[in-house]
Structures are given as structure tokens and as C-alpha cells.
Length: 341
Image (cartoon, rainbow, N blue to C red; front, side, top):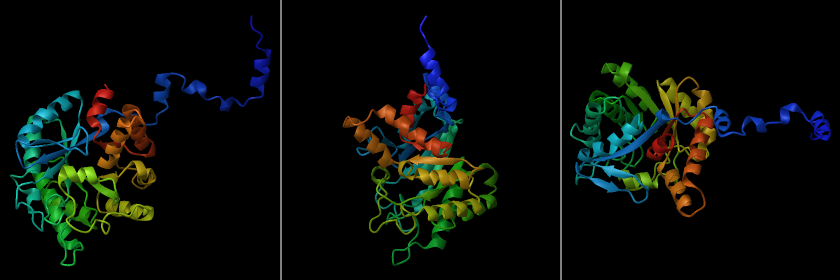
């Protein structure tokens, strides 16, 4: 029999609480250590729907992501639903010549891509949860998120009135959730009032991009949505990257105006904001948006052999849960539907 005397003496000099290895020495134990676990039902998949019904176009800067026309959409989405997809986030992409104007009129065109997609998905996939991004940038001739004054600055009053009208029309078409991403002051209040007046507030979830930062991570999205500003930038109505205090104020503002859920965007570089949101808005769902630039960076790193794509994807998305997110908008949703099976 081995002599354990020396080991016993050493153990006696060790604090019992310092021995942690027994808590994660097995793959299942390592999963149990996660306070929140990645599951299929927390993922929301962004879809780009264009006004060309036959379109199916790959986005070079977004590996694996395509822009679809209404007639191509179901062939793509149905297999994902069969794998466990529960929710989608719709972005309309009007591309016909002359369809964009100063007021984003095409945003809620009954024959436009978003409303047509909502009606199609509600009919053919009744269990799929449909979220509509509410913004004007894809639909305005200037590419900004609202209506502008002559000097190029945002006309707050006209902008929020127009954004609220779009949100209500999406809800009327059958959207379960509207997600205003413009970051213009007061739009949550106007949307809520519009939904109340339309008799839809009791069945429409308002998920606010309350903490959305300007920065360098949106380029691939703008390629997909054709939504880059024609001039200027969005720094006067999206938060500066160092503006933690502004983000906290914006979170409280949107909560006070009736937001039912909160989106933090981007995610990887803003985990402190996500943690703030989880504290400030602790009674409502917090959603991390793993944006196009973050997604493309992971793919680029994997292609360069710097990381393993699956491993880094899990590491990134588990980080969002650790920081306080309950939901994740991710372009990697199709991969996670396979990985989590």
C-alpha cells in the first residue's frame, strides 16, 4: 500500500477552499459551471430581405450570409427552423432605382420587403418569432436614420414621428416585436403611444437598441443593407465608444419610455455596458448584438489560423451571457443550431 503520510501532512497545511479542480475536471461539470448556458432559443438570426423577389446574393464581407428576395426566403429559413431556429430579425433592403427619399417612405410600403416578409413568415412558419428592425437608414436617400434638417442634423420631432409610424405598421402586418435601432431621443415613447392608439401595445414587444455605439464594426452590415450614409456619419445620434455614462442614461431613458427589452450593440468590446444594462434593466431581457464586423473578424482570424472558429464562437457568445445577456442576435446562429444539436 502506498504511504500517504507526506500527502496527508501537505493537505493539512492547505486551505480546503483552495481546491477547485474537482469542480471542473469533467466536461459535464464544466458546463454546470456556466451560470447561463447557450441554448437554441436564445438566438435571433438577422435576415436581409430585398425588393427583388428572386434575389439570392452572397455578401462578400459577411461570410456565409446572403441577401434574399421574398421568393427565395422560405427555402433558406425553413431548414433552419427545422433545426431549432426560434426567432429572426428582419432588415429590408430596397434596391429599385428611385425608391429612396428624404423620409424613408419605402420603409413601411405594404408591397415592400419587410411587410411582405412578415406576412409570408407568419403564414408559413406560425411558430417563428418575428422581430422587425425599425430604422430609416436603409430607405432614405441620404442614408441617415431619421429625417434631416437642411444643415444635415437630425430633425428629432419628424424623425420619431416617422419611426413610430413605421413600427406601428410593422405590428399591424403581424410582427411580434419592433426593434428601433436609430438611437434618436424619444422614439420609444412615440412607438409605445402609437401601439396603444392602434390597439396593439398588448401584443407587441418593443426591444430598444438603447445602448448602440457608433464605431468601426458595421461595415459588412452596410454592405448587406446598402445603408451607408451618403455623407457625414452617425456620431451625433449613436453613442461615442467611451460614453459609458451616456449609455447608462440612454438605458434609463428608454426604460422610462416603456421599452420591454434592451439591445446592447456592439457586444464584444462593450461587455461593461452589457453588465450595466443587466443591472439597470434587471427585470427585462438584455440582448447582445454580435455585429457584422465582430462576426467577420472571427471568420478572418479563423481563416488565418489564429483561432478555431467553433471554439472562439463559443468563447465570445458565452462572454455575452456572463456579462448579463439573456438573448443574442448573431450571424452565427445557423452554426450554433448545428453545434448545439
